[in-house]
Length: 312
Ligand code: GDP
Image 1 (tube, rainbow, N blue to C red):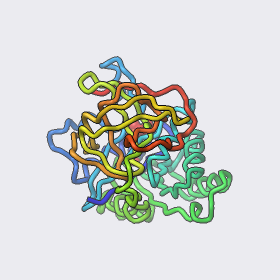
Image 2 (spheres, protein in one colour):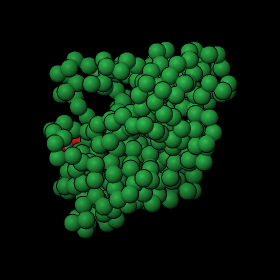
Image 3 (cartoon, rainbow, N blue to C red):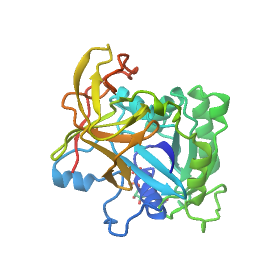
Image 4 (cartoon, rainbow, N blue to C red):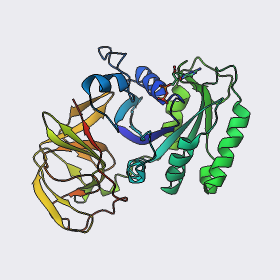
């Protein structure tokens, strides 16, 4: 199956959660038995219920023969390093902007970082059904923002879709067509976002830890994008700090791949994919997880307090 890795960038309330829900429900990965009220990216109520905070998540949708990993970008601007690490896991981004409010500070902050790491974003002007929508002005504001953030010519040439996440449609024109649902967005992601580079899949395994979780059954889980090589359960790995010092050696006990809202154990994963691995007891965010023969760590983004989340 082909693969795409994207981030969705939006200011709070611009409709990210609703859109991801609709992507899930219109994609092949949606499972009837998945409780629809359990929304994809924003499980505030669930979190409150469990008394925990989930700070970063990923989900995946399937469109035709492509699996699209979607990672959420943090809703806060405090930890710069975290946003950069997450953006470094993906090859594209969808910038979702409310057609009435226009780009807001959070859009600017994360978009600036996305442009800096070289992503070529897709712009989606959302909530076009609002009576006070002003899509033409908002598009101009977004363009001006790209310019102010030093976007390259290629980045400035961004594709634009209009639509309503809640209405479950996106189209090249603000008036629709609406009856194609989110197909234009799925197609644009597949067309515009580069396929992850799998050229290094025969090289030794390397991955930067990006999201750390404590799981009651599996222990420590680290999510990251496999930069090179491949992994199987039981494979020996070591963990290197950014300065090259050895933190630990161990074995991978489990590899989890994203499928819809769930994560499923897999027997194999290779360069380009975003996975979660269990089995190591010390390795953390910004460390390099790699084959025992590797001695050079990958260059990590600035280190900030690791994000420890709980998963169930
Ligand atoms: P998030 O904070 O970006 O995840 O935003 P949500 O998806 O939670 O949406 C925020 C609010 O906007 C909710 O009340 C949604 O029902 C509403 N909303 C989402 N999509 C649309 C849309 O396409 N049109 C309109 N008018 N409202 C929407």
